Image (cartoon, rainbow, N blue to C red; front, side):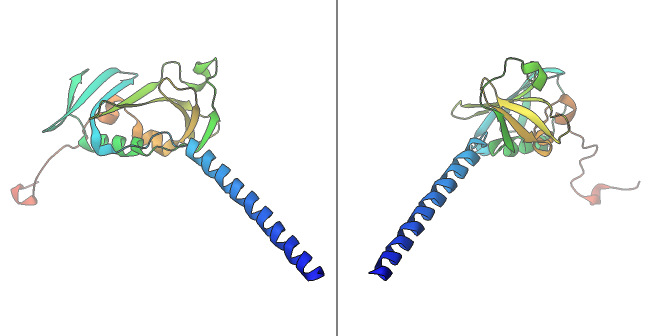
Length: 185
């Protein structure tokens, strides 16, 4: 009888620990899912709108590539658009600062932020406001445009999303298809 009672207690303890462990894992997964800012297919993007310190820009994807439809005209970097699209389509915050919108957005650089808005072929908008750098940290404040949650996003992701005019310009000086066309230097 003692062995049976001990076995029952051991099984009950195991099930209790297992149940608590499962609850903790589920809670951790839910917390990690909250950090996912965007999750969409970057190949569905057909438009990009940007607000930054140099003004407002609108870009459309045509059969010939990206073209500026509004804003200063300049030679675009096609690679930068790919970088922005792929980074934003799977953007995950390193942590959540607040799930409630603070009264003072200026202290986070979110009063007049750089905004990147990607529009997919089904007309769905994925828009992020990028604020200032977190003091003493290599990350930045960000929020989904119009959202309440303030995210902390890594500096490397913010650099990839940076959409100032200088970032969007093509930096390629020469475009030579092959070295056969070079006669001398």
